[in-house]
Structure formats: structure tokens, C-alpha cells
Length: 362
Picture 1 (cartoon, rainbow, N blue to C red):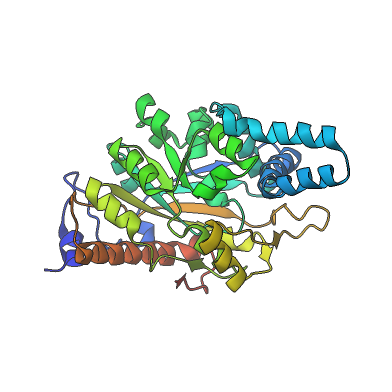
Picture 2 (spheres, rainbow, N blue to C red; picture 1 turned 90 degrees about the vertical axis):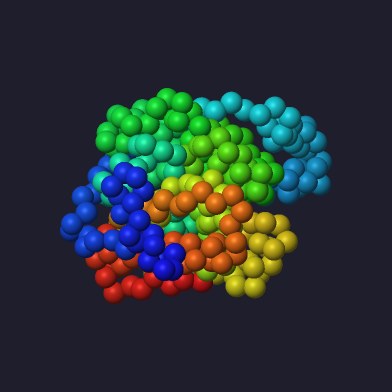
């Protein structure tokens, strides 16, 4: 019997089947919408966070320009301000998380998190890895607005579905994290922002294994920067075929995987693309700097407010604990994960996305 057949008929011990899913209408969904506090505050939150992400990589050049023009005092002041977080790590701030979640108010329909009831049952009893797709071209709206920051805002009655918050202990809550590109922690402004969110860990082998060893709940964008480079407005693209490392590590720790897909992520911005240039940046620096813009000429950082953002988590996949999985085992479970992700997308695209769009896997 192959792995796919065995997992399809295997119980996790909680009377939960992890095989191919039933029809969408047969699976109860727990949904939670954040409306924010209006477009103005939503605009401020988005432009502040994205502004830091845009200005951060450019700031050293700004310092150099100030020196070039003889404005030494301004250059020293700015350089000192940018350097402090590299000497002293800023403490986590739930207030920053709550501020960023105001971004939901920019969207006409807010942002919504949907979790299949069977996934909630499993998440409530053990640590899980939320595997989110796609990355998107900017900060990853689904990953950030519908991920760990909701929990780190420390207002579960406001930002987290009650069915889930009531099952997550304070100890688990304190350990929740999300995996981020290591290069981001080396950039001015972005580094302190990630530390202050209190839910960001570098996407290194040591970082991921540390979270798994401590049995932490975590979020991950398996497609990473390669998925950013793939972004095309109106095209559902996921970089997953060559990303099996997280499967290997999850097998070594017997983790619960929760595939997630954000409908609307590929519709909020237009992009210049980049092709080989972005691929070179990814290989050389470990990150890409895409050129993207929203529909508003007066503030290109703002996304399309008419787009509905729906993140759906479902098709939970409980992996067995295999301390030294073979390449064949990793390959089989990786394919099973891809099947579950594809099934999740196909079942919900009619309800939350575009029925005529296929999921493109790279």
C-alpha cells in the first residue's frame, strides 16, 4: 500500500481522517472577519509598514547622499537611529500588532480567516504548522493579517475565532511564531519591526528546527521569495514543487500541517515582474525587491480596496514521526501535501475566489 492510500485510511487517534476531503458544503467552516476602524487608519497602517519595508533597504543610500551633500549631522543622526536595533534588540510589542491589523479597515470587506472545523479540533490539541500560500508581491497580506500577528495582538476576543482562542493555552500563545526570510533581519527599519511583532523567526535550518524542537505553533510561506518573483496579477501561482525541506523537518518531529490559501492575494497589486533579475537577486542576496503598485496614483503602496481577502485553512495533514525519513518518504508526503493544497484551492475557489482560475504549481 502506498503512503497516499495508507494516510487516506489512517486515523490520527482523534477520529479524524486526513485523506482527500469531502465536498466543501459538508465541511463546517469557522470564519472570523476583521473590519478595522475605517479607511483612514487602514491607509496609515499599510503605508507605515510597507513604507518601512521600502525605505529600509534604501536608507543606507540616503545616509550616503546626506554625506555627499555635506549634511553630516543629519547623516550621523540617521545612521545612529538605523543602527540602534542592530545593537539592542527591541522587545515585542502587542501594540504594533494591533496597529498593523488596522490595515484590514482599508479593504471594503475587511480581511477574513476561515478554518475548517476539523482543523480547529486538531490545532486545539497539538502544535501545528500553518503552511500559507501564495506569498504575494509585498508583505503577504494573508500570512500577516490572518496569521500569527492576530494572536500576538493579545486581544483574542477581537482578532481570533473564539472556537480557537479558547483552546490555545497562554504557554502556546507565547511561543507562536512565523518564519521570515533571514535577509530581512539584516535590513534597517525592517529588523526592529520584525522583532517588535514578536512573531518572527529567521527562515534558517536552525530557526525552523528550534521552533519544532520546542513544539511551537508556527506559520510558514513555503514558496518564499521564489513565489514573490513568480507573482503576476490575476494568476494563482504557487512555488512548491521544489520545496520539500519543510516536509522533511515536519516528518522528523511528527508535526501537524495545515495547508492554507489566501484568495485575493494575487489581485491586490500590479507588478513589473523581473524574471531573471529577481531570480539573480534571490540567489545572490536571499531576497527580491519587486516593483509593485496599487490602483491609486497618489499612493502606490495602497492595495486595491475592492479585493476581498479570504484565507482558508483546511485539509489538515498529521505526519508520522520519522527521525530519519528517506528521500522516498519525503517525496511521497510532499506529493500528498501538494494534493491536499490543490484540493483545498479547488474546493473553495468557487466560494472565495475565481471559479475559472486554475492553480499553477511551479
